[in-house]
Amino acid sequence: MTSAGDDGVSRRLRSLPSVERVVRALGPDAPPPPIATAVARLAVDRARARVRAGESLSFEEIESDAARLLETRSRARLSKIINATGVLIHTNLGRSPLGEVQMKAVRRVASGYSNLEYDIDAGRRGSRYAHARAPLVALTGAQSALVVNNCAAALLLTLKGLCQDREVIISRGELVEIGGEFRIPDVLSASGARLKEIGTTNRTHLIDYERAIGPETGAILKVHPSNYKMLGFTAAVEARALARLARGRGVLFINDLGSGLINSPPRARWLEREPTVEAAVADGADIVTFSGDKLLGGPQAGMIVGRSELIDALARHPLLRALRVDKMTLAALEATFEILLRGTLDELPLWRMATASLESLEGRARALAGRLAPLTDQGVKIEAIASRAVTGGGSLPGEDIGSWAVALVHPERSVDELERALRTGDGPVIARIEDDRLLIDLRAVAPADDDALAASVLAALSL
Image (cartoon, rainbow, N blue to C red):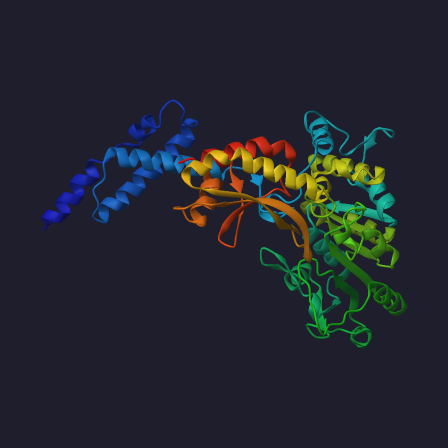
């Protein structure tokens, strides 16, 4: 027996619009039919669930829901945003941006055929890895080099190819989480190597390594703590001492630097304590691994540099094919290496932004505050203030860089509402909240984006 309530639900379900009607309502600017149909079907399915929960919906409400779903889908696609967080290497926002020299190299190679795996001189198949080998050797002083798709892959391939079924010794203070819950012990486990922890979280001594080396030892692994800093009662063993020990005991020494600093501008004094790849090689590491899209200022990639016979062994490993980089990454890397070899670091957006003078940032912040003056009609308080930026991307923990920002406070809207309005508006701006104010930090904003930044903020907050 069916109740009157059930009859009412059934009647409202039957009255729901068809998917085709919702598609038509999206109008002439709707996306291609498969996408519009999927969005409309989801809107109708959501309406059906709400009706079964006891709600009554008009066609206009369903149409509005479809439009919102379409807008959400559009925002979810890869698109350009303005990074006003003050975090230079922002992992969630794509890490280091590429400059015109790098993008020109990518366009040149991606728009047609290339000698990716073709040796022009020999007239036969070549190696894609040869394109990066010579500049990396020149930059780091290593005997040879190999490039894969990120630093975690570089470490995974190194451990898999050189230490599988062997023990790898590592200090407990270096069992780091790389990011996204990827942890060094997990990488070791996936490689088939066996983790052997030594020392304590805050103190590890050379004698700990000496006692741990045995017949099953394949390597000593040192992981640079690039995304955290330990202070107080701490002790760690220098890379040079570990290299001597490993060489004397016939095991490998692998140094995972992560951030991958090669050259740094003279104005960047906050980099003075960051180890360089060249120094790691000179200290005697058999293998050094590091990232391409952090302090190197290039695209996402993982570099492996070290002794020729070890690099050759990794180049023959079957796992390499699953980790290889494509032509666009190699083109961007080649351009990055050329910039580093020339020493013209201002051609890399990362270093151009990182070393911008406080005077220039202050001038831009005051100019932006002036352009946002129409918001004061709504009672918005606007102020150009000194700020502090950070490198980010798991690099240089505890180090910050002077910056300038524009602080916004609305008399009626919360700072969270302001942040969301900027984030979800046309031309998204990602800012940060500090001391109950919305800060638009200019350290990671290119000067060429200042006009777009001002327009986006005005559009998002002029309600």
